[in-house]
Image (cartoon, rainbow, N blue to C red; front, side, top):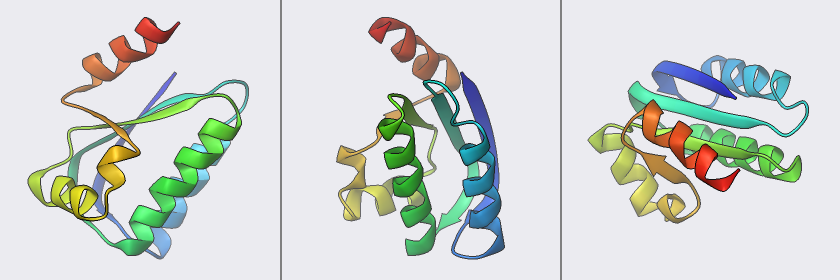
Length: 104
């Protein structure tokens, strides 16, 4: 299991490319990935596309990607785009980790 602590912005461009590359490097085996959004203050459509792509890549390998602690802005963007129905969102890392254990 991997926990990524993101900070700043998840947007189209260099920031998003770094996130995508890091997660893709973790996709061996059956990946269980937690993306901690606590310190992310902005996400754009490109950033949402990156998260969806990572979700699909993880799922295609039999794994799961969970989101943790989105701030009110990020939470609202997920709700407006209906992506809150795609992603499992948790209040903290411990809750997300416990959810992985319940499925095991």
